[in-house]
Each structure stands twice: as C-alpha cells, then as structure tokens.
Amino acid sequence: MGLQSNGLSLEIVGREISGRPVPGKPRRPAGPYLLGLPALLLSSVLLVPIAVTVVQAFRTRDGSFGLGNFAVMSDPAALHAVGNSLAWIAVALGLVAVGFLLALVSYRLPGVSSFLQPALVIPFAVSVLVSGVTFRLIFDPTPERGTVTAVWTSLFGSSPTWLGPGLVWLVLVSAFGWTWLGYVVSLFRAGLDAIPDDVSRTVAAEGVTGWRRLLALELPMLRPITGVVTLTLVIAAVRVFDLVLIVVPGPMQRQADVLGLNWWRATSAGDDPGRTAALGVMLFAIVAAVAVIGVRGLRRRRWAMPVAVVPPDPSLRRPRPSKRVRRIGWTVGFAVGLVWILPAVVLVATALHSPREAGLRGWWSTSGLGFSSFSAAANAGLFRAVLSTLLISFIATAVLLVIAVPTAYLVAWGGLPTWLGRVVTSAFVVLAVTPVQMYAAPLRDAIDAAGLAGSRIALALIHAAAGLPFAVLLLRSAFASAPPVLVAEALQGPARQSAVLATVQRTYRPALVAVAVLEFALVWNDFIVGFLISGAGTTPWSLVLWGEARQFSASGGTVAAAAVVASVVPAVLLLSFWRTVVRGLTIGSRP
Image (cartoon, rainbow, N blue to C red; front, side, top):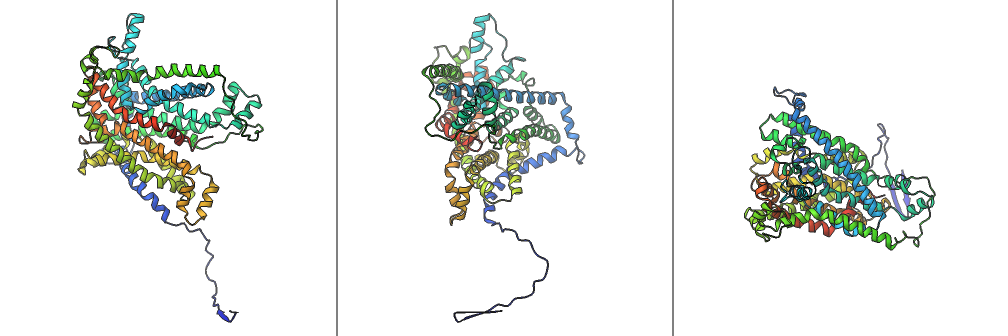
C-alpha cells in the first residue's frame, strides 16, 4: 500500500495475520510494587518465626504431623487459663458499653469534656504495668497504706483481702478500665461530633428523640468506630499479661492465670516446644476469631434512615446549650474527672515519700516527704534504662514511618490488582492481631544464635515489625478516604505519584501523627516484648520496674517513683497531640 502527501511518499507493507487473538490487558508498571518491598522484608521478622511456631505446634515428638500437641488443652491449668481469657473478653465488651455511654453523656451535656478529657487521656498514656502498680498501691491490704482498705476499714471496721481469691479480679478490672476508658470515650465522642448537623436536624424534624434517636441514628452511624474500638479492646484484653504479673501476688497468680501467662510458665519450665507452640496457636485462634467478627466494623457504612434529608444551610447550626445545661456538664465532668485522676495522684504522692515511709504509711501522710525514692530508683538503674528506652522508641518509630507510608499508599492508590490488595490487607489484619507468644520463642532463639542478644537495634526492629500492620491499616484507611475524583485528576498529571500525595496530604497527615505518637508510646510502654525477647543489654525501663516490683511491699516508694518518671514522656506526648491522634484514628471510619 502506498501513500503520497505533499511530495512525501510512504509505502506500508503488511502481512497476513496468523494465530489466535490475544486478549489485551493493561500493563501495570512494576515500579510501585517496589514500595512494598521494605514492608515485606520487615514483616518477615515476624512471619518466619510465626511459621516456625505453627510447624512446631503440629509436629509431634515422633517427627510426624498431627494434633497430638494440642492435647495440652486438656490440662486443667490450661483450660482454666482459657476460661479467664474469655472472661477478659467479656470485660472488654463491658468497657466498650460504659465508654459509649460516657461519651453520649458528654455529647448531650456540653462542658463535661472540659474537665474529663485530660483526666481520661493520662491513664491511656501510661503503661499497663504502671496501671497495675498504681492499683496495687490503692488496694494494698494494709489499712495504713491502702486507700480503699483504709476507707473500708473506717466505714465497716474490717476489710476484705482485695488481692485474695475472687476480689483480685476487682483490682485487675479496675486497672484495665482506668487504662483504656479514655481511648474508648475519645473515639466515640469524635464519632458523635462528626454526625452532620443536617442529619441531626432531619431526625429532630421527624420527631425521633430519646432511645429512638440512639437506635436509629447514633448507633448505626457509629458502627465503623464501634468496630475499631471493640477490636482494639478485645485484643488488649486477650493479650493481658503484665497486668496479672504485676498486680496478683505470686501464690495467687495461677488462679488469675490467662493463656499468655500459662504459655510463659510452660516455656520457662522447659516444656516440650511442640506443646508450648500449641498454646501459642490456641491463643492466636481466640484473638483471630474475635478479629474476624470485629473487622467487619472497620468497613465504612452510610446511614440509611428513610427520612427526607434537609438541604444544608450554613446559617443553621447546632443550638447553643443553655447556661444551666453547661453548668450541669461542668459539674459532672469535674466530679468524674476528679475521681478518675485520683489514681495518678496516689502514684505521685507515694513517689514523693521516702522508701521507708512509703512502706509504713499511706500517700496521705505528711511525714517522710522528699525525693529519696527517686534517688533509690536512679540507683537501681532507672535513668540509664530510660535513655535506652528512648533510643529504642525513636529508632522503632522512624523505621516504621519510613516503611509504612509508602506501603499504605501502595495498598490504597498504587494500582494493585483487586485480589492482591485484599490479600495484602487481610495479611496485615492477621499480623495486627497476632499475639507475641506466636513468634517470641523462635525469634529469641534466632537472636541468640546471631549474637544479637541485648542489641537495642534488634529490639527496635522487632517493635517496628510488630507495629507495622496497624500503621499500614490506619494509613491505608486515611489514603483511601480521600475523594477518588481528586486522586484520579492527580494521577493524570505529569507528577503522578507525588501529585497524589500532595492531593491527600490533609487527609493522611492526622493519621501520620497518630501512627508516630502511638508507636512511640507503645514502644516506650512495652513490657512483654522486652520481657520475652530482649537480652539484658537492652534494659528497657519496664524491666527495671518489674525487677523492683518483685519485692513490692518493701519497695513501694521506689516502684512508684520509677513509674512516675517513666510516665512523664508518653503523658506529655499524648496530651500534646491527643486531638490530632483521635482525628487520625477515626479519619477512615467516620460517618
């Protein structure tokens, strides 16, 4: 075939088409996939030990594979631990309900949060280990030292043994609730505040009030946040380890045993690795079963109440509450906040007594005031341990951010095939709920074999690997919540990937702050990873506190001082960024 145009001659030579048609597929550039390579390498720090644990659980002593190791669950002690772990799940669900009701009260009574919010944030900032120390001081069985015991004795003449059979659960649940209630209330309150005024006015115009409003509007719109809160609390409850270890006296610990502690005792006693691996797998199965139910709440759902929606009107705002309502809110918030901050006051006041006076008298005594307990904590190596923990926390947080941001972007907007995106997201959900007991033993053995026992860098990488799944899921949710139209327009421009990041920066920035703050606080407050995996050279402050607390009656002042010093950094950090953290946690699941 020849063509001529303006003196230019073109000749086109063709050939006969042969072979069957080949369906066309859009070519996906391989470059974005490289964004996930660091996450894959870091996740292997956990994936390989988890695989080793699973293989050990199903490998019997004769070298074959089967369920023989799971006969350990017929042991009465293991069954008792499983029952206690299930009881902790019920505690977590109850705490979610209480937190929602308190958030609803603060929403209906403006002014409650003014005093209540700081009082709720401070306990969430401190570690569970510090919470256990605080409530052990409050429920000390000696009337001269224990706050509750002193009040009970003055009212009724004698006091029960709070740390004895049965009643020790009251202490444990109180400490757990004091730690987590602020998280629950803050997220629910953020969800309630995010309900559009237009929708609220529509419901009011339809005459929906009281319980009908709660069931028809608020609960359905809070379903995503309810899923996040419930999943977090249940996993925290099933993973309870250090709280029982620090609160319950040694002779009583088996009665309050949970599956994680039962695994630790079996491992420490040198039991068969296959049987201890089976305990870890059972713990994971319980957590995973709860996660499968709770993760459904992570999906965004719209409110679909069949009423006519009132058109938006900027001039219409939520009516300002009357002075009487505001005063009631301030009074309720001040009263609840005062009660909630009391444990922190007990801890600080105890730390301000000398070790001798703290062992003889309660925190309300004016004798023996001073800083000698802090000096005793320093002599025990606290400040060196604090600096070590600071280094570990900084390294873990930096590594996590560098790896999590591109990975979350890849999963959200990186062009992954739909099936692969679902597989990656599901894998991160599984890793996020995996208990430490699933990878602690193989990982500790590998670190010892590599000569890295006591290495701060190794411990920081383990913390970063453990925090990566949650960080990716949170950042992915933030990326995905950006308007798709804006992202599509950005992808069509010459900058492409950088344009997408610039487009959604307002969306993901709060989530980025939330990831950084929570990772730093979690690593700082960690006990179980350092306790089960790290060597003596790392010396996190939590291990120093645990060492001092083993002689609790004789070192209450020193333990309280160490707990106060270790709580300052996360408390200041969370109080400074709490609003941004809450916004980042709820940005992908708001109504």
